[in-house]
Structures are given as C-alpha cells and as structure tokens.
Length: 313
Image 1 (cartoon, helix red, strand yellow):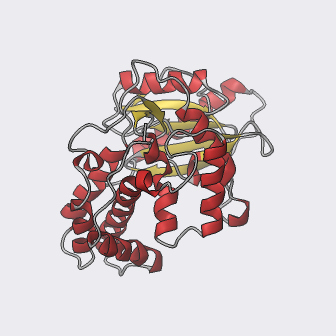
Image 2: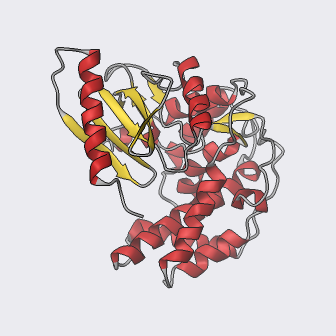
Image 3: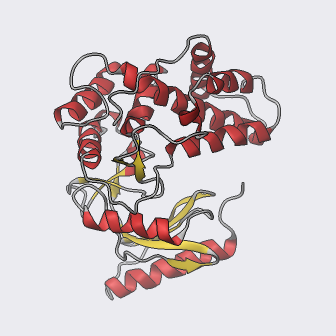
C-alpha cells in the first residue's frame, strides 16, 4: 500500500497551517510530517496537529472515539475539535501537539505512566455507542498482507504460529469479555506529554479505541519481553505499575501469563508478519530484531498457547 498522495499531504499541510493560525495569529510556524502511512497521515504546524485517518474509518465510529477522548482529558489527549472534517475523501481530525517519548533515551521510557494510564482507561465505564476495539482485526490484516506479499522462508513459521491461536485472537469470532474500554494499539509511541515537555503523559491515537478484552493492551510489551526485546526490569516496572493502579486485565498477584499468553502471541505474529512483508517489498533480508520475532513464532508454533482468559475482563 502506498502512503498519502501528493494532494492529500498538501491539503493536510495547508489545513494544519490554517488551524494553527486560527488558534494563534502570532504563530511561530514550522511544518513537519509526523507520519505518512496507509493507516494515517499526520502533519504538524507549530502546536497544531492534523491527522488523516484510514480510508475505512466511518464518521460515526470516529466521532464516538473523539467524544470519549474529549471527556477523559486526564487519560487521552483531547481533540481540538470533536467533529472530523473530510479532505480528499479522508476523515481528518485536529489535535494539540504533545511532546513524544524520546526514542534516543530508552532508560527514560515512561513504562509506569503508560501502565497507570492503561489501568485508568480500563476502569472507565464504556459508553454504549463505542465500537469494538480493533486489535485482533489489525493483527488479522497483517497476516493477510503477509500472505499477499509473496514467498519468503520466514512466512511459514509466522503462519504456523498464527494458526495455533484461538479464533477470537484471529478476529474470526467476537472477543471474549468485551465490556471493557481498551486502547487497542498500546506502545510507547502512543504517549505524549501535554501541554508542555513537563506536562502529564497522555495516550494518543483513538483509531483502535473501543470495547474489548483489556489484556490486549498489555500484549505488545508482553510480546517484546517474551521475544527478548524488552529487558525483564522494564517489563516488571510496567506490570507492577499496572497492578498497583488496579488494572483489571491480569490478576493482582501471581502468574499473569495465563491471561497474557494468547494476545502476546497474536502481537508477536502481527509484528513478524509486518516485518516479513516489508522485507519482501524492499527485497532485503530480515534484520536482527525482525529475525528475533520470526524465531519466536517458530518456537510458539511448537507449544500450544495457554487459553485461560478468566481475568481478561
């Protein structure tokens, strides 16, 4: 899939400039493209951010997600406007700029803040009109893209690992325990400080927000830990902070892995599928990190997942 077309990117840039100048006539200006992917194009002008959402985004679902963010500004970055607009056939939203996590300073990664925000989000009563969290559906799309990418030796272990998962984790049937508010795509890139560099951490990106099984929100850090990509100390910090904040996705004490195992496997397969598909498209070998998640899929395929989901509610 291609990134944003020229007209869309140009339109977003002009829209961001107009919105920023409407907020502050003395705008210091300065434009940056923060993301340009099929699942979202994001442009910043000074302290204003404009996002074009995926093509399959519906107005009703996006509006309900925006309303939720607006009502919980202590957890989610609130939009500047709760109503999306249409630009070049895409739904577009407006946001204040927040300072992201510094990828060059891993020791300062806000694992405790991320965990506490998740626990608070999971305890918010879910509105009746909110759509289903899209985590499993995104994992299934990654697998579909892997199958479409063409032959690659690493595809087989990823598909074998995927096949061992229960149907709900492959988005083939509804998720169990879908009464909890979930983010749907938690990683450190989904946190910003707002309104300034020393402001509180908040969650961003409402595209996958919805009701679902909350343990999915812990799955990416759990998968990184299981693959050896996240040091044990950082995983313990994250898990401990989530439990101390009363997060309901895992038991308050004891082994959390019976609840975490299935979604962690699903996120591992999703990550590996994306990596292999990108390598095929670029005609390059897998790098060390990509190889590690494929190797994890190979190990996963030989050991059935734990199917206990009693605490994922």
